[in-house]
Image (cartoon, rainbow, N blue to C red; front, top):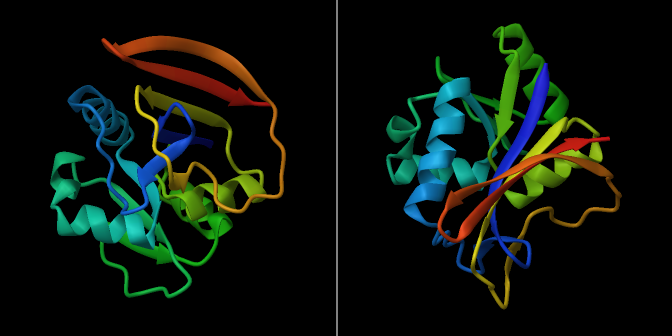
Length: 167
């Protein structure tokens, strides 16, 4: 199974403002919806899940099978499952028969998958923004990672998408 980390970020590496705002372009949001809905799944952290659920984004995403990485597992239902570890998330998605899974944030979830060396590819939509402070792509990591550029494309007039393979 291929594990893909997909995130939008500023040119200085932030995935959200200090207040968890994500002022991305419509094209970036469309790209996010397309990637999630085409895979039919996503793995996200609790905080990201709560924000998506509160704003009714799950429907826009095609109601994907959602795995929430959280230290405080809650009851799961048919489309949303809570797990404690990245390994549990991958095992669950594997049991559900997915060939590719998408990690959709946030910073701690991204870092947990990186730490466990479970990320196969990284897709980044780079927005023409700089936040003085914010939420970094990976929180508190102590690892290094080498990447190979698989491709790049223009998502919008001022947005570029970078696609990397983890070496």
